[in-house]
Length: 432
Image 1 (cartoon, rainbow, N blue to C red):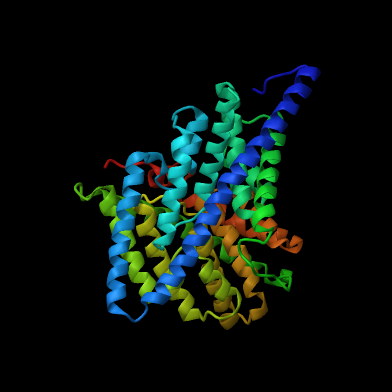
Image 2: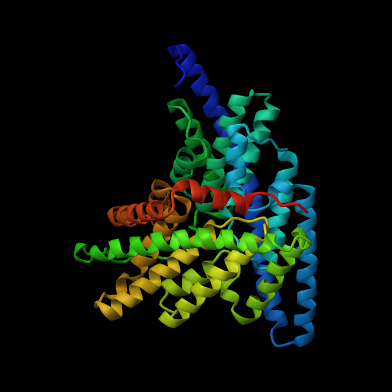
């Protein structure tokens, strides 16, 4: 039950939490800012490297040697701090619930360094989960510096988690809702304002340095007519099935990695880095989080056959990378996979049912939200996140329909508890 306070106590505690929320938001925002800048450099250097080695066998061989070194370095980081493995969302939930305790001073630098090395190697990983973990660790740091108790530390860690998501997506409302929907469900009404304060502060901190530009840049010029809304149900059903398949595939990949007992963490990473080198030579668009796939898709430069091939390769490549336990999340790949499915669905409907191709971008956006809801089982966050990213008020109803349908279908096929086990296994540290 929610603890009762006298009016004076409530106002005092509320003011203290707001001030602390600002501190956590600033600290979390700075941590994510450093992480984003590091990943931007990694992505730019990777592009230059791939251009430099193209068509030169000797340079290509040298790059594969460097990839092996990168895998070994990431393996050393994970051995030094196992809690940087994977995205980190499930680990944060454990820490807030009091079942796990780790040192923020080790996780912050190790997570940033590990993410930089993985993105430099081109692994198909996301940056949302690590940003949430970085924000939560910043919240833990602020709490320990201020010498707060356990309950208040959990609150500040949750504030930091929301700040991390807001800072990576420029979506403070989605950051707050994600915390309340997934991270810290036991929070009271008193807890809402500091979480939102942290998210807004973190978003403002990052925007002051990197600007307020959205993560994915594409516009919706037209509103989908209600006569086409029956397609939204079909899309939601497809995404629900696909979301369950994604979780199953990630779990299967982890099982395959765990069978060779002598492989070890570094061996698993070397497989992922080696495959990244191959993909970098044959299909560089599947490297990283997936923004290189979304932009040509929404720009009309990706044909149906090319989109289907990219979807298949991205699926398998993501499974190898996530299953390896590399420091990185799966939210960005999930959004990219959802975008590809939405584009494929819309292009198919254009041929089969005469859908106007002008609405392809609408379905790309809707599928990103629906797939997010189906995989992470947070439909409200999905709606708000994609709404904030697109700034399209006219899409709220269609977003809600797709997300709710995808969520219900995924829940019907695979209960939430089974999905949590799948995601938790993808985040847990492995024996070296």
